[in-house]
Length: 66
Image (cartoon, rainbow, N blue to C red; front, side, top):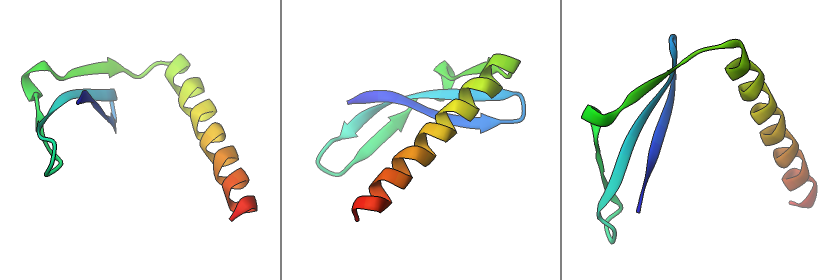
């Protein structure tokens, strides 16, 4: 399995790729040399706000059923 860890930092979003080393143990290897910074822009702020609103809606729906 592979993917990205996304961290919000002051300058934008830091994307760090990873891949699974020991799937049975859940160990993952970060590839810090291949990490990249996605600069913060106004469109990112809009996207993050929409994403947070979606997460809040999902939380509301789940709490109504639990």
